[in-house]
Image (cartoon, rainbow, N blue to C red; front, side):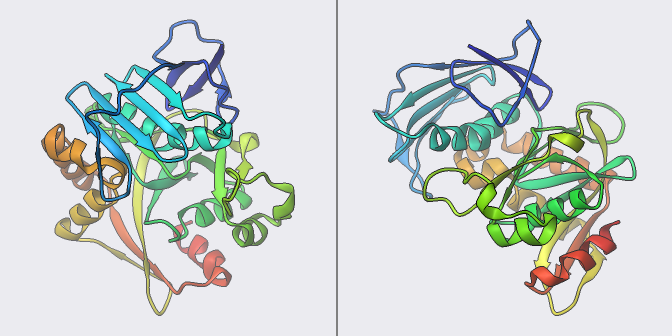
Length: 295
């Protein structure tokens, strides 16, 4: 048995999750255990994932990986296929499974990365390959503290500023990004799993352990020059909804359960926090200039 912490939650797991921080907590928020996951009611979605959604449960099955079920944001059942690599098994747990858990628990969950800047959280939105992790790594290399990579949980349940909850101390970087942003030799960094190009980069030395007020959200976009401009309410709403981790991984969960709450969370975030479009050409050479603009 293993005890970890991530996103402010104490996790008890039968599966080793070395990306997470060990926890001494005895009061458990989430249990992860091996068991059987029923595939009979699942239907394949647009991403090729088999899925079944109810108000209390979300069940998944991935070819080459196995099945997983999230129940009430408190329990995860893992049903791996025989011989599956543990690194591959951990990828969905640390991604879409955590996203569903956090959604069940009332957080706004974004496909984004977050870094502490001047005592607050700067969040970077964007699709796969748009440079969220590269920008986070560049800022980390400049002395800023990473908060979360690829999945950002925002707590809007208080009356004050939205708060970003720290995830776990890992950046997922392509080899050239690791070399450019941090001067790493990519060959010394482990791959996320066999056959994956991206590397796992631990950032425990400056990882931000505490929730931080959300100071700004930056939507990464392609442009001719490096430029920063505020988004209006309509465009900001489109970007937040479009970069929802839940909408990306299991849009049925928003369509059938929790969609109204999700829209309310997006609206509340836009009302309290500035949201910008951060345009730049697609060039690693310009990432330092982008970091200058954010700082």
